[in-house]
Length: 205
Image 1 (cartoon, rainbow, N blue to C red):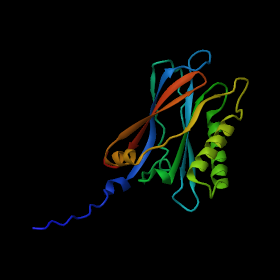
Image 2 (cartoon, rainbow, N blue to C red):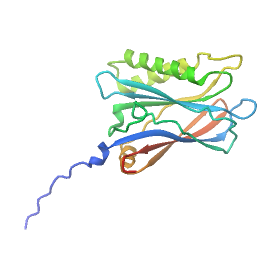
Image 3 (cartoon, one colour):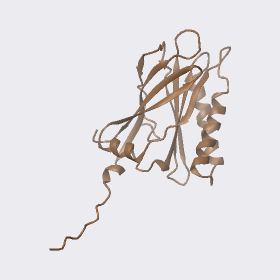
Image 4 (tube, rainbow, N blue to C red):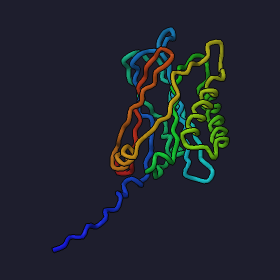
């Protein structure tokens, strides 16, 4: 008896809609600021899988009175999909760019900072059309750093802890489509160290 191998189709679970959000932040070490930290995070999401890339920036926080060893839950909406409410299919991490910026709030306005970052991201993605994905990411990170450096309050300006790409894998997305899946990213800078946990959540979670 001859057995014929039948090709296995890729699991459709990887194409189920998912949402991705910041679940919580944990302070491993406070920044060099006097007193407790008041961090906040800006997550910029770019959907490259369309003719005109979609861009959105979501503000999480500020989280007040944060000390070393504390974990603070985030209750804001997801940054994927871009309407902040509806799940959207995502199976290839190359189809998106996610950039997270951890800030320490002093006298600045986090909401105004979000507006500046989104405007910088829209401009950056438009100007980098035709570049490789890696170069677009580098340019986007640089432009976001420029935007968060613009003062939105005085005399004590907000300080940037770190800006970095939030690079999820195909396996992260696959697991998130099946059930809730989390991934941690570390943000170090301005004397501080924070862990940010992100949750990928499919419709069956």
